[in-house]
Image (cartoon, rainbow, N blue to C red):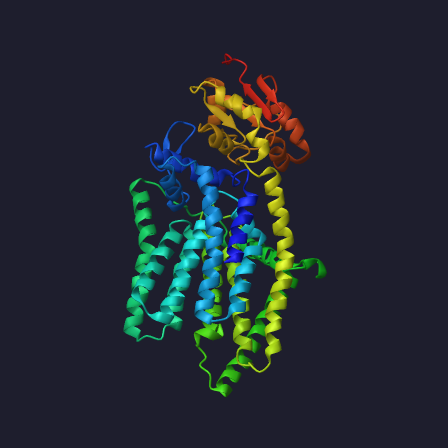
Length: 523
């Protein structure tokens, strides 16, 4: 309980400027806002057409809109959802692990590791769907553990609903459904007919919400993610493998004490670790047999460890499949690998419980997981507290102190509503003004790179045509320099100069500029 309260207070402290918001957060929030206003769950494009939410599943936006119906500010709502869910997940992990294994030290370690993870602190400091996704997914697995122990159908039904809502929050929630089915199949001790009925009940409840949503999208002639055109699946798998290995390496505490990262080193460490685990499992199975102890006793940690292993493998499979076979592919960053990270940590310590339980006379063995957990937590907490301090001082993303006080945003708000907008930060414009804006095509990778062309002179680019013929405003925030630098390198300054050459400067602030085409009358 104390760790849960500390976790909620930490997120409260880190989000004093509001949870960070970027493009995906804007889509969730604005979609919820449009639903409240009666326009539907989706976004208006720069052309004025309404586009139902399709790239992301709807549950997070629906939750935001529910509270918005009562007049709650959606950004504030997102903040308090994160504060409450952070504490609830810690409490859920601790209570469920203790109820299932009767191990107080494993319960405390799992709770404290979740509390200390930097990526968890980062995710729960932002207006993203992951907090709700994690809560629903972990709740479904915890309920399945309790179902295995008590065999009460209400627990299985609730687990199926929670898993279904996790998938309706993020499509990768399919991994929780796969994990639940795998655990029921492997570890259930009921007769096979009953087991198949349980799996069918759980699977149907888990998939029904998302299947219904996808059918509705198809009736709107919308796709969720498409298959990449002319994609080399082998290359995509290689990219996934390399990115996953680097992320795995970042999870290791005190990496400064290890040799410099290389793919081969990280791969060899994984192999050594897996071989060690297999040897210890074999030794522990032998010891349990010698002691005449049941191998699948819930209190020995093996089932919990198995569940976490299945979750990690299932989630990696779903993520790899999405990255290789769908477009746009998910980002390969620590945030998207968070369920794997959490599953690996809880799985390792559950297996340690399994390893030391048969050696009850050697009480000193319990010090091994405690010391290991303290070392990992110290390493993680250093980064987490730095992150919290940074967010507390100035925030991050569109809700940061800098953007809240940006003069150019106020000037964009004052532009007549019949003037169309084009910007290098279209999501930022949408978040603050509620007005959709065209993206700069070359920054979005939708137009060929050029060093010399002035903006508005390309007859084949729709936003430039709108800028030239319809009198749209070009809003260049000061983030444009970094964006062009990533695209053009040391030619970024000449590109920006040529881009705005002879355009009419309407406004210039420390945060950016607003331009019009030379023939456009100024508002």
